[in-house]
Each structure stands twice: as structure tokens, then as C-alpha cells.
Amino acid sequence: MKADTIEKLRHVSVATLATALFKRGLRNQVIQDVRPVCMTGRNMVGPAFTLRYIPAREDRNMLAEFRNPDHPQRKAIEECPAGHVMVMDSRKDARAASAGDILITRLMMRGGAGIVTDGGFRDAMRIGKLDIPAYHSRPSSPTNLTINEAIDINVPIGCGDVAVFPGDIIVGDDDSVIAVPANIADEVAEEATEMTAYEDFVVEQVKTGETIIGLYPVTKEENLRKFADWRKRNGR
Image 1: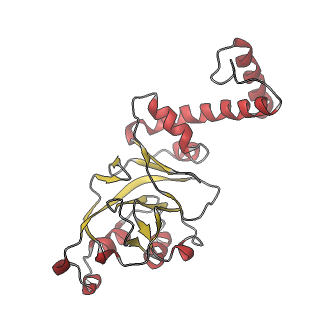
Image 2: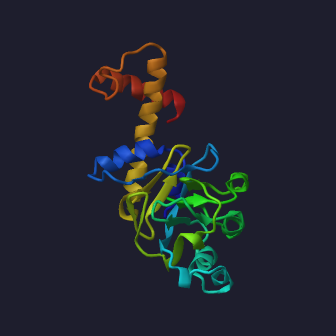
Image 3: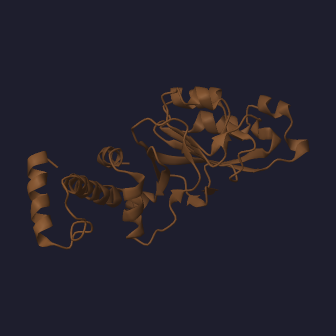
């Protein structure tokens, strides 16, 4: 990723990105039913590094499996590159935890940019205090071995009804998480930055009593002139 693209994506909302993707025909990029473990007021941004779970089978998923140095869940934590977001396909099943605070602490110490699951995290109260963005469906205490088996690392997955490919750009804010195809991330970041500037202008106008008709969306030329003046005054 270009450093400029990363910086732009740190300052735009998932909602704005969803609109920019919709303009390009992409309707289903917001990961459903995940939310921040703790709101941070800053965006999570990074390429996706994925982990896929399948339904657990009892003869393959005893507690002793965690002693296996090649266990995919452990390997994924140790192999996720710095600056990447680990995205887990937990089959939208939060009955068992996708990970806990020890593994996520290790990911944080290795420079991970964040972690997302469409399942749940155990030790969520401690994860929320870590300096790494984390998104899940809800807290969940049982070990993942009771429900899920980690099976594949860095392959295409489905997370919250969204297809996520390794390298997709994952952006999360205090509302939700979106996957931006890597090949259009630069242009989407640029457009979303422009959209955000106009939306900030609109909010100021509405707070002064302006009508949204002709303003949002903009259909009156006079509002474009006002916006141009606003940008100059605010360095936007």
C-alpha cells in the first residue's frame, strides 16, 4: 500500500467508503454483524491476512491440539505480517472464541494493524484495553476447539457475508469494517477523502439552518461555490 493511501484511509468513514464502492458496483463490502470490542476514535487500516475455520470434529480437536507448533491458529498469529489486519472466517458462529487476549497481544507485539472475526473473542474486557483495534460479533468464552477448527491460512474467505481476499484493504472505524479491493484502493481513498471534505462542509451548513435540498447531494451551483470558499478557509 502507498503510504499516502494509508493516511487517507485513516481519516474517512466506513460509510463514505461504502458509498464510493457502491459507485463502482460493489454493494456487499461491509462485514456484517461485527463491531469494535472498544471504540478507539481512530481507523484500523491494513491489508488482509486471513484465517479460515471449519466446523470442529471431535477426533481432531482435543485440547492437546494447541501443543502442535503447526496449529493453524497459532501459525497465523506468528506469520501475519506487520501492518496487516488478520481477518478470521469463524462461520458467523460466536458460540466459541476465535482468539483470546494472549494471542491478540502477541499479534499486537508483532506489529499487527488489527484483527477481525465474524465470531467472538474471549477475554474481551482485556482485549479492549490493548493498543490494537479488534472487531467481533460478541464476547465468547469457550475455546474455539469446541466449535471450530482452524484449517487454512491466507486464502480467500467469507467473513460476515463478505468475500475477503488476501491483500484486500481492510478499514475499520467505530461503527464497522469494510473490505476494499486492493486494485482500486488508491482511487477509492482519494474519492472518499474528497467526499469527506464535502460532507464536513455540509454538516456545518446544516447546523446553521441550511436545507439539504440542493446541498446534499449537491445540485445547486451556489453550493459548489460556497464549498470552494470553505475549502480555502479550512485548508481542505
